[in-house]
Length: 91
Image 1: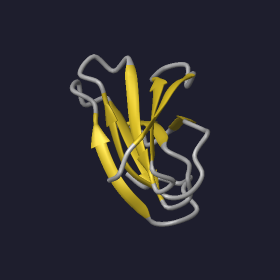
Image 2: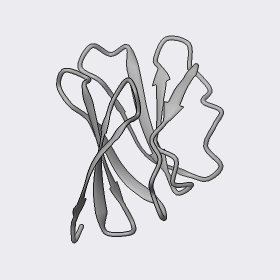
Image 3: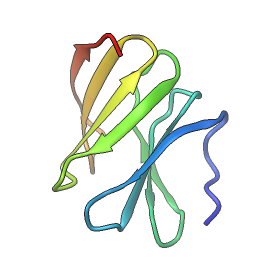
Image 4: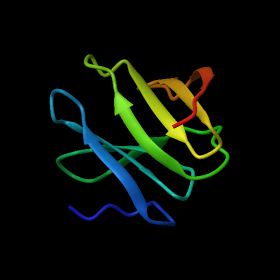
């Protein structure tokens, strides 16, 4: 599957537990959710200022956590993309 949507290098990609969704992040600050079987872009998770180094969906695919080069982790609702919280990190 070819994913079209990131403007810069992908830094991480992870499937959800069911394997039907793929989550990617990149140096373009646009973490993205995709349908795994088609590669269709579902949407992005905003509020990032810089490269996003890691992304991880929760076990039940309700939430997505990202870690960004701006030294913040951000939590989003998976399906709506609603921003929930920001947590500083040193990673």
